[in-house]
Image (cartoon, rainbow, N blue to C red; front, side, top):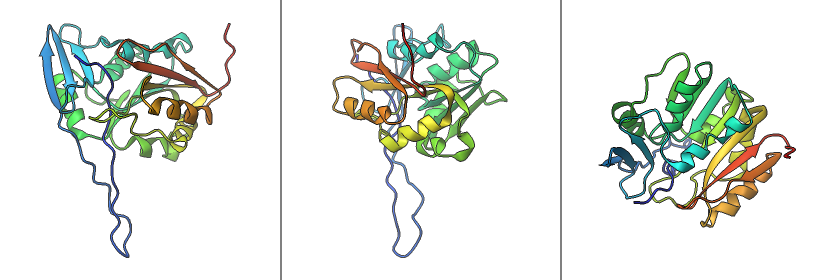
Length: 235
């Protein structure tokens, strides 16, 4: 069974003659489920696993690369605001919400079906004063002036059903991500080490972050990039 990465599908904007650009019309992949040996898996109509949950431990993080997306805990003890771009099976969202009771958690997901299935099948709690799951484009979120320098941690996992590299991967996108972080903020991005998009993404991050460190590639090919807004001094 393949365990790779998750995300949202690319969007196409349409422009009518002599009129303003038409609203974006996303083309969503089918959201499907499978279960095996006490695990429930999220798919986008393919065998690629977009998220997982152990039925007996719904708030635990099962996939190794998702566990590594929490490696910011080595550098920050008590963040005030953590955000995820790409909900997947809500593993990161649930874990941050449960384990950091003083932290605001925001998750951004474009596909309403993903949000709905996380609520019904993956034990995603309802929105409250600390938790906000928003149906919107991740690009729009990071470019919203209201989010400027508001985040301690940004976890980015944006893949579509084809898993051909992150959906958002430009230098402009990562510059906007950096702008959303506080002075000592950290961004973590799920990449795929043997894919041509890997070096493109790392190079794009280098333009806007003080330090970018890649964790060792996992057996399934995932590489977690840790991007620090400020230059770091490691022992």
